[in-house]
Amino acid sequence: MGNGYCLSLLSLCPAGLGPSSAQSGGQQVQGIMGESFKFPIPVFNTGSLSYGNLGNIVMVVGGTAALNLKENFRDRLQWDKQTGFFTITELKLQDEGQYKVDNSDGQKILTTFQLTVYSRFSFSLQYLLLSKPTVDTQNCSVLCSVENDRDVTLSWTREKEILNKTSSPHLKTTLSLRLDIEKHPETYYCEAKNPVSSERLRVDSEEHCAPTAGGHLDFSAKSDTVIIIFCVMLMLRDLFLIHCIGTDDSKRSSIVAGSVIGALLALGILAGVAYCLKKKPSPRAEGRYYRCKFHSIMHICVLCD
Image (spheres, rainbow, N blue to C red):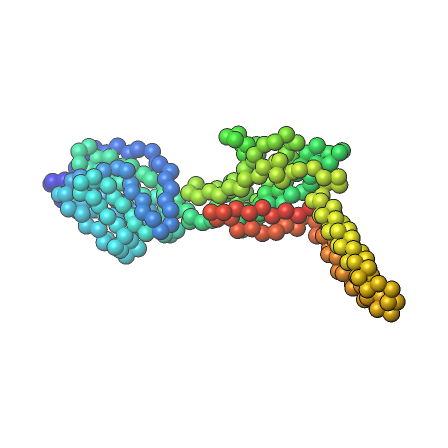
């Protein structure tokens, strides 16, 4: 009985009648959902590709392939006669599992692949500035977070050195990683990745960890300066108006009264803005952060404690 007959009626061939077989160890391989995966073992004349409990999903006999053997893979299987490679197109998450390439061109060789299919996605990184250097504290603390998924790793790196990293088998939770940055200027990266995707956020210590007197972003100095400048401008305007109207007491009194009321209203508004900028978050808001979507351009989200 010829080899081609044994292949097409594989289950009917008595043991030992066909060629001797040698089985290699399984290989862990990854594919990307929606893309193609090529099995790197060629079959030119006689062989097959099998999947899990489905059995053969492609058979090659005499240099001709039978492809649409199983509905699960209909119109998604290819065999290249020139290279001998089997390919699955338009990968689905359901395509994961164990595949075997049976090469019977000469000595029968059975190669096993364990295929894992990953989805390629853009990670949503979150960045939180916990504290800034002060006279008493030399370090700047930052926290990076990402929504967890299968085989996701979150890490802090400096140049090519991994400073720390974390992962978790619990999906749909949040991975968080803290880093204490020293005062000297350095560039750090928070990176989230799975085997087929990665995204990273750049943090420059000089830019994001500049010290302030109280360890917070210095909104107070800016807002106070604006208020002082505004008050000086109002006073100069009033002096100019009084000088222009001369000694007419009634007109002068009306202008001064209007200016005072306007100045008080303006000061009230500016004081409210300054209060909002300087106000610290309540203890209940501790640990809160802003969410940023990071794609081609990344942004920094900062909240002072």
